[in-house]
Every structure is written in C-alpha cells, then in structure tokens.
Length: 639
Image 1 (cartoon, rainbow, N blue to C red):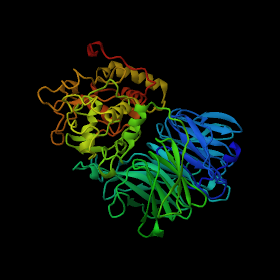
Image 2 (tube, rainbow, N blue to C red):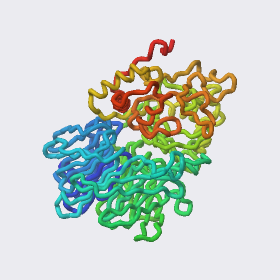
Image 3 (cartoon, one colour):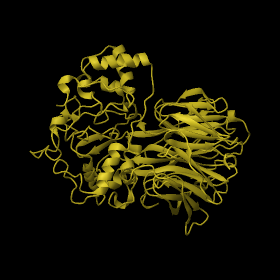
Image 4 (cartoon, rainbow, N blue to C red):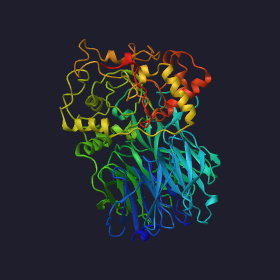
C-alpha cells in the first residue's frame, strides 16, 4: 500500500508554519510547502505529526489511516515525488527523511528549515533554511545538497511552478520571508513602518524579482506562513500587525490573504483583509491556503479559529465569502483533491485530519475526522498548547480575534515593536524562560501566570482566572486556575530554542574570548544567558507599590523619556539564546541587528576593534542550546 500512496499530485497544499508540498510529474500542479500532501492519483494523503516524530498515510477514499511511520525530529512538511518517494522535512533535526521501497534515508540540510517543495520531475527538493537565510537544493537521487542559494532573512514557505512540459529547468521558485522588514524610510512601532517580501527565482537560483506586500489600512503584513501557486500568481496567507495605539484586541493583529502577480506578468499585490467586518466575522492566524487549479476559489486554514474559510475570488472582482467549515484543533495545513471538491485538513493539536465536502456550500459538512497519531504530550502540556494557540475560547479572546500565538508564532517573536502602556516594546521570544523571571522588558511580571493580565486587557478575554488579573506583582496567580497553570507550564517547558547556523568556528571561538574579556557575562552569563532573576519570593517584590521589580533592571543607555513610560530604572536583561531569530533588538526594537547593539558604547562597554566586534557578533549569533554557557562572574553569582 505504501507504494500506491507514494505518487504525488499536489493539487493545492500550502504551508502553515513551515510546511512542504507534493510534487507532480509534469502534470501542471505546483509543489508548495505544506504539512499535508496528496499522491498524484489522488488516492493517498500523507500528514506529518510534529510532536510524535512520525508521518501517517490515509486512504483518500475510505479515510482509513495507516500506522504512523517514524521519521526525524519535528517533521514539519511532507511531499511525494512522482517516483513514489515520500520526502519529509524535519525542522528540529534540520534534515530530510526519504522513505522509499521500505527504506529510510536522512539527509542534513541545515538549521531550522521552514518549507519544502519538489521540482516537477521529483529529482530536486528545495528547502528553505531559515537560520542560514538560504535555500538548500537537494538531489534526491544522490541524497545530497548540491547547491545553496542565499535569499535574505528568514526564508519560510516555498513553492515551485509546473508548466507541464517535464522540464525542471524552466520553472519558477517562490519563497516567502516570514517576518516583515522595515520599509524604506519606515520606523518601528508604526502601522505603515514595515513591508513583507517574496523572492522569485529561476529553478537554478537566479533572482527574477522581489515582490513586496505593502502595508494595508489595518497594518503591515507579517508572519507569512501559507503559500499557494497558480499559473501566474502567488497567494500568501499572513498576519496584519497594527502596533500603533490604542492597544486594543481589535486593533493589533489581524489576518490577511494577498495575491501577488508572478513574472512575466506585472502589477501590484492585492490584499484582502479577512477580519474586515464588511467581509467576515473575526478570524485568527491564517497558516495555510489552497487555491483551486482555475484560481477561482481559495481555502484558508485558520489555526486559531479551528475553521477553514472558503473564498470565491470572483475572477478579479471583489472576493466573496463562501463560508466556514468546522475542523479540529489548530488547523495548519490543507490539501485539495484533484477535483477541488474535497479538502483534507491537518489539525495539529487534536492529532487528526478533517475531511471536508467543499461542494456543499450550504451545510459545509465535515465528512470525517480521522485520528492520525496517539497523543505524546502529557495532559498539562497539551492543554497549555491548545490554550496558547486558540482564539475561539471566550476566556482567552474577545470574539475570536487574538491568540497568544498571534504575537508569538511557534513561541518565538513576530519581530514587531508595539506601542504599549509601558512604552514601545519589542515582542520577546518565549523560549528558555525557566529561571529567568521576572518577565517583560520592565520586569513587571514575577510569574508566568501573570499573563492573565494580558489576556483580560490586550486580548479582551474574560480570563482564565477572573478576578486574579492585574495582580502582577501582588499576591501569586499560580495555583488559582488549572488552565492558567497549564498555559504557564507550556510556555515554560513546551517552546524550544531554534538552532543557529554554524559560521566559521575559528571566528566564533575568537568571539567567545571577546565576550568573556569584555565582561558581557556580567549581564548575559549563566545557563539561561541572562542574570535576570527574582530578588525575593513571588508576590513580595513591590512593597512600595512599584510596577517594576527594580532590583532586576539594568541601565544600558536605551531609555527614552519622550517615549518610555517605564524604563528610567533600566530594563530586564533578555536571554541571548536564539538571538539569531529574534531581531530587531533592545526593548524598543531600535537595533536592527547585532551590529547596532554593539555600536551602543553604554550597552556594549569599551569600544572594540573592527575585528573583535565582528568576531563577537559571530559568537552572539551562534548561541543556541548546544552552546556551552559562559559562567557568571563570581560577584554576579546568586547566593
């Protein structure tokens, strides 16, 4: 049965967070990043199980699921070659797993791959390597990387066209860059300050164009997760960030779908605001999109809303909402059958696949929901993961607008500087928080359960522990609510640090020496790469009514009295773990890169030579969980 499954016809799958797609053999069907893929004959569906390190095959007619098959760690994308080889991209291992003729082969590709797509013949796999800012091209016959193409910061979803002539060389490669970058003349913290970018290339990596998605009326496009291709257009599912005040649930993060013309055509991109009340009810976090072959209909998997949205593209006229199909928890990928009348949806956190009847636009039925893997997480962690990613629970979000993942995709940072009550605040990643309390740039939270205040204020939710909100530095919020404790436990233990690229080892070693000799460990030493710590028990740290844990703050020359409400006493010291994946830097996002941080003499200390500065920069960007920590200076050790 495995061989029958292993022919690929990707008819419409798109990547959610970091997915791949199926590859057709000269049948005119593009290959696009997705965590769920269909065989060319339409008989079999493959889906990844990221938390179980497996993939599962489903019979597309009977909906019967096979036994899960082990692959690498954190499988994120899957594609099927015309030869029948199953290609799985493993995010945590930085590898491809190839399943063919009952054998498994693993091919290293690089740290933190984001998306996978195959050439029409299935001879080549294109993998975005987000930590290295490149596309790795893998020859599936020789099982090795044959080319690495630099593409700019944070490449994520990837797609390959198929014009049906069996020639891989005349196809077009499309790559999204996950996080927005400053617009020309743009500023952090402004609704129009950033724009999104795609890289459009030839099959051999020659850049053709870099289409941009401009800011929308609501905000700028960000977190470009989903990608779909037709003959002449790319469809990108993304967020819209509006960081300017007021910071209210319906004025911060929204959802968008943008159509981008591909060469040789022209014209600008067109963005549809999915949360526009004139178009739809509020939805949250579009992570995947599939478009029918004729480009007439689009289907968006809304990860925080637990639904699939159907859109009639109206042939160039104003799009029309078809309606919603209910699915499982946290849908992250969608693939259409060859007719475009049935969809298979990967529901990440309910561990199942929804089968949808797209032809019935009235009842919009879910034909089946098929379990594809046993649960591998403990009950508290999976509960916390569902709460973190959900916008449908009214305790978490008012009218389904926001989720924790809206600003912290996969627990990281959206790269946005928000205008908050404390002043401008850059989103901080949530990985490796254990032992690094207090939290927030101004040390205004002494425990993770204090997120209850954010739920009730920023997200507009009723709260997981109503009545306990905003007791931020007062009595403890831990133990008040099982759900709030589960959410805190997931944030504390369920989010890993992304792996960094491995630059020149000699330069990194030299940079480590500069780090130690310059006294950087005085603030960024120890196992958590930060000296941030609580000077006393939770609930006892602001006896004078202060909003900050003042004893944890350090002055580093970044306080701006014209913008910052809090900050006169300094700022909490962030971790250096995963620094490569959390730009821009400093509490207000004013440092675009590490070089900008090191240019601040009050922050970085004594001036460095150009060689030492470059070595230190290389070391800082290499720090991940595999890096041996630099011990705290003895005077800085906690007693």
